[in-house]
Length: 491
Image (cartoon, rainbow, N blue to C red; front, side):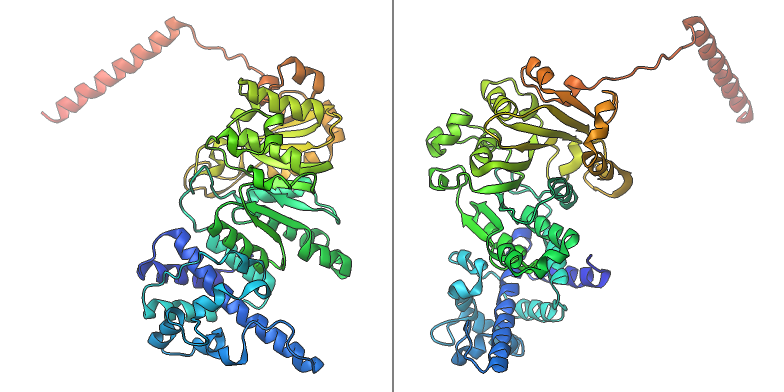
């Protein structure tokens, strides 16, 4: 949990960027991320040097040559602002500046370095650079939790939605989905629209919170750091941010692919993953020719939210599970494509749960109504009873302010999900209930909770019109009397 002091330090960094001329939130985060990465390179070099000193062996991963010491954080942070700025913007050592060295460090710099080709240094003045460098250097980031919390807090400052329907998924909703998915020891997890990698980070934190003992097993640690986490992201800026987010949370070598997951070039991502966690783009239509053909065989559409469901079915291994956020329209849309993808999931695979969320969950970014679908890829059917839950509160006000409140259905959702045997007796008037396959099929594969939820009506007895008229007349007489009294008082 991020402390008040750490929040204040991050706030000061943010304010320094803002007053220094960089006001776009994404630009601030990206420039901040570059500096974190440059500091991380120096920290990694120190770690390699200490290891070499202890073992008497040469440095195995050389991030800086001996003659490049002036490009290291520990060196330039002590320079005066103008000299430091020159080291960032002008080739100083081996024809490289600090920034160019960062872009060309290569594989030894980790997954983040893969996405550096189009990185642009935007800090405009020596004074701002020096300010931010000194502030970052003053933040104690020795442990993984602090580094991860710091970055998540920084990402939380994004105050405007992205383009093409992308927006930041609330972290408590992500955590709920991960808790319900309960990742196992040998999972291969993917987010095909990774963004800032919030789902992958939350899955990693789930293991540390619930299965810390697994990290004593070298085989698990190796799998966790290199093979477990996969993400696909088209936007290079977001890919960089996601890579840094994962590395700061202790996932050293995640597998991130810069690509459009729906395209032909991503067609090799088939039957590869045991768990998909995602909040894919809701907006936009795609050209049929741009979409990988096997997806169109599952759902013939140009709508991205439907195509992503087809994509996830293709990407999952048999027996693999998916937890995905979809707009409400996916649940009840009447087009042929809407019905086609719902029938595919319900009839040919196993739909496990539908959680309807209130429309304010994504404010202030968007007011769209959404739901979470949980399904399992089987290829042979298996849907028996689908669990529905009508979430009315998520612990925050459903307006643009999103202030924390007491009302919160998430603990109840997790409790009921872990005890589904108790759900068989719940009435359709409750927050949650089970609906059999045959009933959903009979309703043309409609998954809207209102289709199945029953509402109880209490009889309210009102006074007769004559009584109401008499009461109104009495109030009118009292008002007239009061008005006359006031007039007398005023002379």
